[in-house]
Image 1 (cartoon, rainbow, N blue to C red):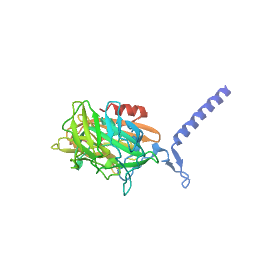
Image 2: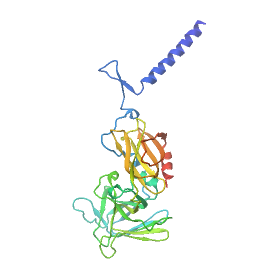
Image 3: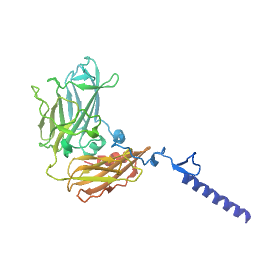
Image 4: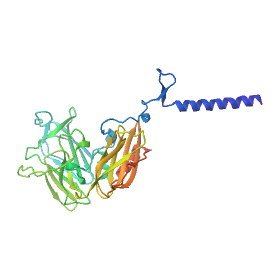
Length: 343
């Protein structure tokens, strides 16, 4: 009986020890104050401090994959073909070295092109793009293209000869819904980050003979003549007569503007708006939501090596209080599948 009692005592003490250890995980002792324990913020999940300014965590960088990567010589015209039949045709010698004094490349320079075609709301989020025009007016996207060019030797980014009337890029975008009211827009130049860019309408340049950019609408495709690379595409404004209201969201304490980005995804249009972070109020918000819009709030977080996804459906009304979004842990594949479902 005595041995049984000793055995039970040993097991009890073992469980008590494990419990104490589990309580102290995530904490560290302040050596200057022996009786005070503080949260160990070196563990990512414990860091609840917000950055003072609006930030744009690079969470989606692991989600962005170009539709087509190809290489060609500078003295060749070259056509990149996509799986769906879309094509991008580059003329000979259109690339320039970047820098203060851009210059033509030697004819034999090997160039790498990276092309992405944005077709869905999920693609917009993957690329960190909001569909906002001048004065932060809401836009709807029809088709968006991103073209980047690099010198394969040294991987240096290249420019395009925008002032040469013979260096026009011929683009054919396959689409199952051609919108003839969509016009050519480009992402505002001079911005260092996509998060602060707006879509700007681009009139014809007046450069003969083709006067790019030009858009032709076919039954199942768009034909675009462009004298620029980078981000551009076909957009149209949403009804500007609707009143605008503020939409705000908040998340649990561990989800801060250092590890989380939040978007409003519109149910009835191909439109996405990033909610900017407010460190003082610990919220994410945007003032640019047309009243009575049906939206889904989507949050993406990367804390340590763990991904989190949160969603919340809402109708934007003047009576809206900040919406509570509760993220759950997801694998990267699960997040990709969710974004791919946002058509």
